[in-house]
Image 1 (spheres, rainbow over the protein chains, first blue to last red):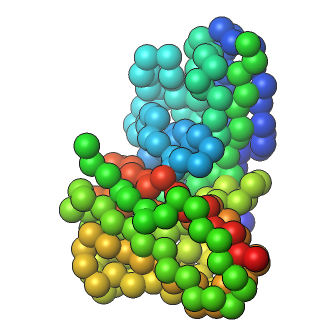
Image 2: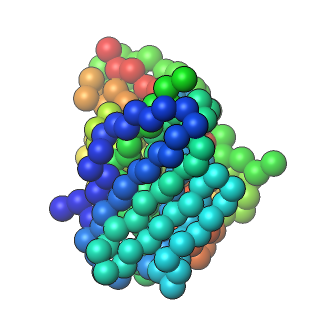
Length: 112
Length: 114
């Protein structure tokens, strides 16, 4: 049973527009969420995170929104740039152990 | 610059071979992880270790074993490589409080079993 779901395997966005990547979770005990970005032939790198006590966290062009009642989070990238083309993974933790629970990833393609 | 280093970027091995994938971190992290990444399946946890000589099975441990003799080194062993183990293998490490500090990943090893 997937506890973290990224239902869009891929997303194509025009350069300069907003990219919105979505993530849903089922475990109400999750209290910390992270987004990672992965280029081909490289390991994932940390992008941005949010604690469950917040509903928004912003870092430059990247903003993560958390809707706890809907068990949904989203990553907004504004404006989208060609270098943002990558696979984005959503991950969650309930703080009880060492593990992150990962979504399957969304491949973002930024069109020039 | 802190790092997780995986010994090989690309490997080609024959079916039935014993394969060793090495991972070294220089951050004095307690926790280390081995994942494999396959298209459409995301990151699947094979094994993890939260201390020297300690290991725990992840979601897909079958066909794999691990070794952690030193804090900085975590090795993944494919006892008898099979074609369905062709994949991207990713090593990661994290601090003892783990998840809230996130993971640091290596660059990955692309393993092809022929």
